Image (cartoon, rainbow, N blue to C red; front, side, top):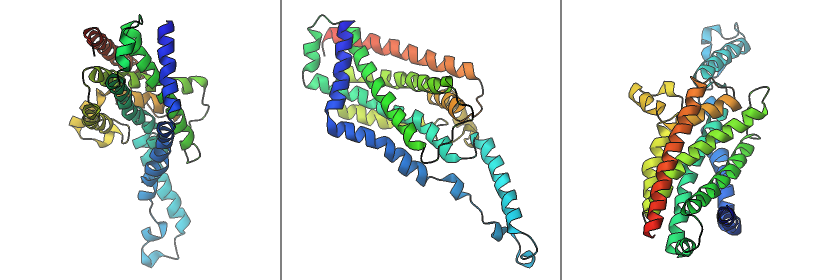
Length: 290
């Protein structure tokens, strides 16, 4: 296990040692939440002036505050039904915790490509370290990075208006992290096996556009499934991103979940199967030479 630990430490030191990369990695969550999250303010989009709802002939006879209260009550009821919360930013930010790890997963594969092109991978392969440990060190290093950045993403969203559910427990903090890690394993498994079979990082960046965007938009990360056409709902129900978002929102904001254990089992099973597939073919490629 010492070889695995050393390689894992190397992944972390490489990330912390490259200050421009570290700086951009830390700033990216701030941009996602502070700019995109707050600019796409659905509550402001549907904000209606109570005065405009009162016919001109009745103005002066009806209190605008009464109309405003009725409008807000109806709006909050509709938002609660659609998003599980009356604040769309909370819904969006919790979904971004899931979507963010999708895009970070591609960088785990890029690191493998650069190690191959720089000759570092060949030097590791002549050591007695197990091939599976080389794969796992890359995987764990990226998971650690995603954990740190996800925590920063959540921390950034709090002063911007993120609303946790009442009576938040330790389990409500741990389980979203577990869901994000399982989804990250699923995504990383795709890019890791691709990285071992290519020497061009442009292939991974092109694949990220082909894989990441459909995974994000064909899920409930940004919009609830109710607002999608029937055929897209069917696809989204089999998307691991949807189940990860279900778990994150259930624990952090109290949003209802169709079937909790079904989401946990589906997410864990799909991640485990893809991880086993990716490790097998990555180790096979390393045995053949990279």
